[in-house]
Image (cartoon, rainbow, N blue to C red):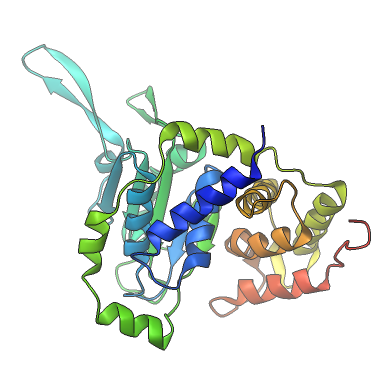
Amino acid sequence: MLEPDALREFRGRIIGNCSKVIIGKETEILDVLICFMCSGHVLLEDIPGTGKTMLLRAFSKTMGGSFKRVQFTPDLLPSDLTGINFYNMKTGDFEFRPGPLFANMILADEINRATPRTQSSLLEAMAEKQVTVDGVTHHMSEPFMIMATQNPLESHGTFPLPDSQTDRFFMRLSLGYMTRGEELSVISGRDTRDIIDELEPQTDLEEIMKLRAMCREVEVSPAVAGYLMDIVERTRNDSRIRIGVSTRGAIAVYRAAQAAAGLEGRGFALPEDVARVAMKVIPHRLMLAGIFASGEDVSVLSDIIASVPVPLEEL
């Protein structure tokens, strides 16, 4: 049964705890929470030193469960993530030794520094929540979320994520700089690592699964669903875009709008929910035609959303 008040209280609890570490980024923390509630994965892309890793570590500590951090480097192998079958000389049998992917939350730090072969080892885990090693499939436990960071300005020793893998990320987010006052309070305050160490989990598996199910019950009216599809179809017909949003992307926007509305304490989604989450869910899934500067996908999508009529009267 849908309980909007429970979802709103949950949102305040999670954001409040994470905000002890990352000041002034409540909107970005909410976006990560929306990804989590939709069983999605998040790609955090920004310049170095803006708190990407700290935000994801704080979120993991707040949600509880097992957590693993992997520093991606060019010499990282697929087996370093998935695990290996090793020969146990005492028993005379091969035994599976799980890799760091077998955790509830995995921080893939600087994911674009690893080779394409290693990056591709995440595809099965991200899409199907399982990995196959030597022909044997091993399933992940719930909740399961990959949180990756990458630096868009670094070019030496990096390997851009292929489109197929980028599409597996539910949202691509950016933190940006703090305000002057916020930054002053951070540089003069306690060490962020000490604050993270003191954070206490704010939820458990039972509550997470219950609230996730509630988000799926949020109503999306035919008018709002039609508004969503109008945006999706325009990305497929715009001359500036070579490849528009896939069906997977459309589903992601739908689920994100449900979660966004539910966490606001509403049992129904509005066009504003669709427009807001679309700016996080869609841009990294677009393939633009010609040569465009970094971040141009966001500008193109913003133009498209502004051109789509909002179904206010029908609502």
